[in-house]
Structure formats: structure tokens, C-alpha cells
Length: 356
Image (cartoon, rainbow, N blue to C red):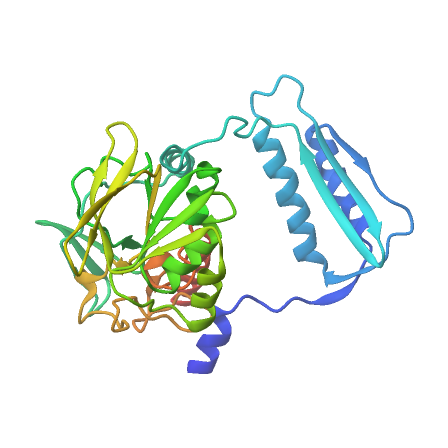
């Protein structure tokens, strides 16, 4: 029975066949012709056959075209083009549109609100409150917000993880204005500038090394006289001419009002202080998953991250799923968390269907 349940939870295996991609594109385009959509096509001759599941590829093409149409809302002269191309022995499919996107860029919080508005369009209801208690001992599962009780047959836990901070004055105010906890998110904004990375583990050394692609100089602040990172990462950082390591040091003060203009370093041995003029501070001293409320309820690692079955979002309690940073201590990226959320939604939907 366990094996049957595991097999059901998996994505169905594709039924592979030799697919004529041009023919499949033409089939899908015929449907859009009936809808009045104007789509230009340019299909390359003598395209090699593709080994794939015809239904899955058809759905992919449909999704790409639908997304292109959605991106053109309000566009004065909407254009969608679909093309195929042979590159060596591979068949390439490309869908393009002239939707506006975000030509001026967009900050993370604003993008999140856009996602929220999109979800509300499809009927999602948001309750902006903090859960105070849970009971997963039997179904329906129960969740409380103070004295208000909610029940559900299935729950997806997506409480995330929070970066450990330095707990310094101005730290919160300067988040997004020079202070960051994500090098891959914000490194580009510090091109040609001097910045600081705080931490001595793998994450800190990896971020410091990554940031040398943009910054003119990276100051790595380490509390001790040695790094905790793996030897290969240590050697890489020490050999990098753009990284200066400050041993036995800590950041004790932040400077700047509207944006970060510098920090004060304190020697952890002598107590001596020294100013350091930088425009960026990246904190990489670890993360803490938001799982305190699930202690003794769900299986978790010693570090607090929820444990899920390999390749899925199933927790140790049937009907409870976990996704995103609350169960991922490796990648911790918005895009991987979003993908994990999609997995949880599919796992949850299939599990609920299986209950009937």
C-alpha cells in the first residue's frame, strides 16, 4: 500500500514517442486561429523528430502561447511569434512577444504584491495574521489565530526561513538600502563599489567570492582567526585579490541615514575600533527556519528545517506538505522556493483526490 501511495504521488511517467514538432505546433495554432489571436509562425523545414510525450509537449506549447497573450494585455500593437529551428541534431522551439514586462526593473516587495494580486484574481483568500497554535493529530487539521480556529483536510506549510541578523541599530531601516542578506539577489546593484560580507562559513565565503564579479573590493569580516568554510572554498577566497579578510573582527556599528555609507569594525581580541567606508553590507551568518510552532508536531532536522520525503513535499504526516525555505537549507532562492510551492500544490491536489 505504501508503494502504491508513493507511485500515485509521483508525476505520471511520460509516454515517449517520435514527435513531429512542426506538426504539433500547427495543431495548436489552429486552435488559436479560431479564438481570433494573431500569432506569426516560422517553422523550419526538415526539423528532426523529437522523442517526447506528445500530450506534455502540446501542453507546453499551449502554456507558452497563453502566457504570451496574458503579457500583452493593454499593448497597443500586440505581437506573438512562434518559431522552430534546427541546431545540429536538435529541434528548438521559441515563443516571443512584445509585452512590456518590467523595462525599468522592479523591487522584490512590489513583485510580491503583484503575485498576491494575481492569486486574488483566481479566488485566493489571504488572512494576514500569525498562526499561534496547530493540531495535526487528526483530520480535519486545526490551525488557530489566537482564539479563532480554522480547519482543513490538508495543509501546506510555507513559513520560510529568516536570515540571522547582527541586531545592530539602523540594521532594519537599511535593509534594501545597502544592507542585504542575498548576494545573488542584490550583488548587481554594487558594481564597482566596496562592500562587506559578514561570516566565516561556506555561505559567507561563497557569497564573498560571488560578489567579486561586481564589487571593486570585498571585505570579509570573520569573528575568529580562522574560517569555518571548506578548505577548497577557503583557498579560493584567500587567493582572490579582490577579497580582503579581516580576522578577529566584527561589525559593531552601521553608518548612513538614507543608505549605508560605512561600518565600524571592532577587534574581538583587543576591542579596538576602526571605520570602514563601504556602500554594501551582506550578512551571511546563517538562517533560521520559521518552524518553532511545529516543534514536536512535524519531523525536523536538528537545525529546525522540516523533513520531507526525497523528491516530494510530503512530511511525516499524511496530508501535511512543506515547501520553500522551511525545508530547503541548500538553495534558499525565491525561484527554487516557488518551484517547491508548485510541487506542494500538485502533491496536495493529488493526495486530496486520492481520499475520495
